[in-house]
Length: 271
Image (cartoon, rainbow, N blue to C red; front, side):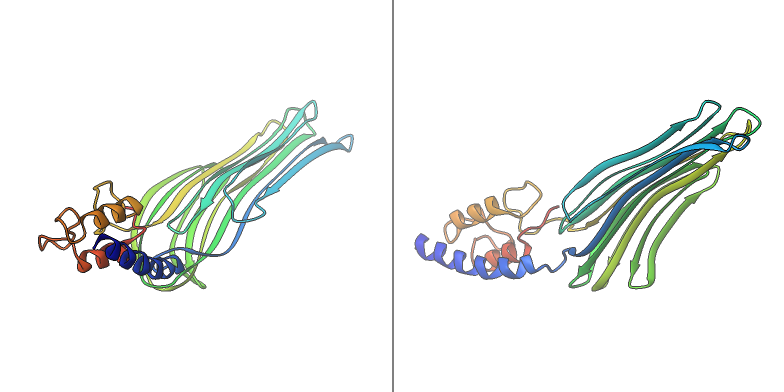
């Protein structure tokens, strides 16, 4: 009898997992753009001399990305700097990105000036096959001339948009949303520029930290009580199938085809 149950489970599981991996309630990748750039310059308008520096980086594919860039020029009586950083990853259940930028411009004589700029940009386009509950965490901060944003669009229609700009702005908010099927664009940016003339320094700083994740809620197929529905739950249900109530998910006192159906439907859930 156990061999028959195992065969039934394997056949049913194979067909179910093909459908599950196709992704109801998952964030299917479409495209990505993740870039860093910065610039710095310093000089003297009286002599006409100046120097500059710049740096760039970008993610070539969908793999996790972690990088930083910086530019710096010290021109005696003037200084310019800029930089940016980003750490991000995406999978079928979660999109996560954090980044920052800074810029400085200073000049300490009558004709000296310094300038800088930094930018950290994140964009991820994903597809939802069906209506899906998500949790969207957003943290933004901007100081002096810094600017930050986190947005979510469905096509050209904004769903969620938060912006930070000005002398000192901080945003920390969580959204719980039900997104309809379709294509979405999630963006995050930290940027800023600074120009410092004679004895008037200028600065910019901004930062974002955001994640969008599928809200699975409690996992109804969780047999072993570890909060998700995965291979160990299948093994426990198989061992109890037709023998005991150790795999009973529907509360009827036994472990049967109905319980197997619940687990297979819920397979891959992360509570």
